[in-house]
Length: 461
Image (cartoon, rainbow, N blue to C red; front, side, top):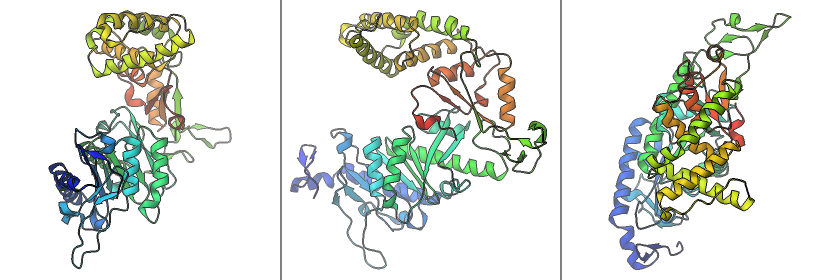
C-alpha cells in the first residue's frame, strides 16, 4: 500500500479514505476516461486494444503533484471500457484501487504498460493528463525519414493549438526508437522530455505518440492538432511538397538538384567548374543587426522607444499576468545586480509599496540596462512586450535592407530553411519581420532563436 497521503483531511490507507476513492471526483474522472476512449476509437487512436489514457483527479483542495492518478487498463477493447475498469494510483504510482476480474473471454485486469511513461510526464512536466495514441498518422510520419530524431513543421494554422506555439513558429517533436514493450521506452522518453523542454509530445517510431497537457482538455486538443499536422505532412510529402519549409515548396534533392516529383531545378542551382551541381545548404541562419536590418534601427529607434515607454507600458498593463511575470524577472535580475555591484542598479520595492514606487524603480533600472546595452533576458522580455504595443499601434515598423526580401524569397524557392538567431527575444524578432517596410516576411522564415534557447535548439536539422 502506498504511503499515507493527506486527501481532504483523510489519509489514504485508512478505512474512511475509501469514501474519497469512491467519491464524486473519482467517479466523474473514470466516466470521462471511458467516454474519451470511445471517441478516440472512432478516430483510430486506440483500435486493437492499443493506446491508453491517464488523467489526474482534479481537486482544488489537493496540491496537483499529490492528486490521484487514473489510468486505463491494458489489452482491453478501449471502446467498450466502463468507468469501473480504471485503475486508481497514488502520486508515486502505487495502485490504490484495481478493477475486478471479468469472466471469459476477458483477460485478467492489468494496468497499462505505459504507466511508467505517464508518471514521467506527471513528474517532469506537472501534467494533468496524458494520451497515448496509435493513430496511423503518428506512426507513418516517423517512417518517412527512418533516421530522423525529430519531426519539424512550420507555417500551418493548427500549430497554434500546441502550447507555446504560433503560426510562424517551428514545431519540433522528438522521435525515439520503439522497443518490444512500452515500459522499456521509459528511459529514452524521459531523456527526450529533458532535452526538449518546450515539447508537449514524444513520437515513438513505428508506434505512436504520447501527448500531455495541463488538463484533459489541453491534452485532447493538442492530440487532435498533432494528428492533423502529421496527416498534413504525410499528404504534402505524397505530392512532393516539403512540410518543414514556410512556403511548403517542392522537396529538393540536394545531390541531383531535382525535386521529388522529378521536375528539374537545375536552372536554380549553381554549377561547379566541372559541371557538377553544387548543392544548396539545408538551412541558413541570419543575425538581425547589420545583417537583415540596419544597426541604427535598433539603436536609434527600438531602444529609445522602449526606454521612453517603459512607464506608460507598465502603468497600462501592471495587473496583467504578462507584466507581473516581467516584473518578477526584473526584480530577480536587479537583486543579482545589486549583489554584484552593477552600476545603475537600484532596489525594486515589494508590490505592497505601491504601483507608482515599483514602476519608478523599474524605469530607472531599465534605463541603466539599455544604456549599458545589456543582453539579459529580463530586459529583452520587457522590451519585446513594449515593442509589441508599438507595432500594434502603428508607432513602429521594422526595417530591412532592400535585398533581404528578394534573398528570402529565393532561398525559399530553393527549399532552403531560413532561421533567425539574435540576442533579442523571439517575440521581438517576430515583430520586426512581421511588420516591415516590405510587409510581412515571416512566411519565409522557419524559426526564431534567442539566447535563452538551449543547445538542442541550435542543432538545426
